[in-house]
Image (cartoon, rainbow, N blue to C red):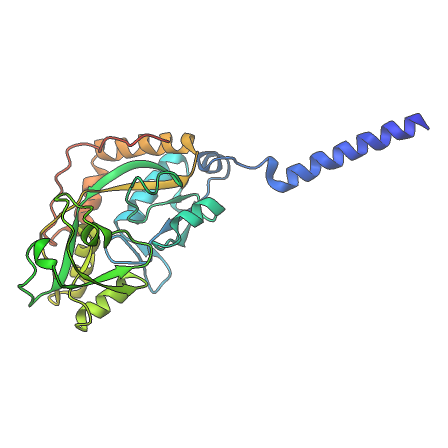
Length: 285
């Protein structure tokens, strides 16, 4: 009888161990481990931002962020064929990382104090500046001050409008503007061209991509008023992957890849590449 009882205990223990393994106990614990073990990564990028992250009719994605993500993935051991792309909108980036729907996000993702408690950021890999996109025939907007009273696009999940309306800009100026809600930047562009708003405000690289796409219809005002530290978003606490990504970013500057990617996507837009080295890392907190 005692032998049978011991045997039953051992069988139960084995079953429990098996169930833990089936629940993911033996799977990769970090994005870096997944990259090294499986040679695969799911990466969140924008699908609606020309020049940065844009999904083409054939289903492929292109842009500066996309190329940066490909370089980083390769440095972690993942070929382009091992990348699964997923659309990351401004409103769902933190949720995607928290729920494990993506392994990393490279999607015009500015490193901010408000986001750091929820996300571990590698980088920054580039420092952009907030500016304003206006209609080509509009000569009334030439600076932050001249946005007073203007209709500004307010994109769900983006903090860009706060830098104007709440004064979180380099000049610490709070500008009285009318905020017009929109679900994404393409909607903003439609509203701007249709005279439903006066300006779209966000990072200059994003605006330059739209200006290039729209030809002579729109222009960037050329009056920057913030520094935007573009980072690589990782699940909170994934320090090993963060440190590996930071090494990849440093190498991307040293071998000239970052400048080549910048020139590829923004030559002719008026944006100038001024970086001489990788920006100082924020730290993998």
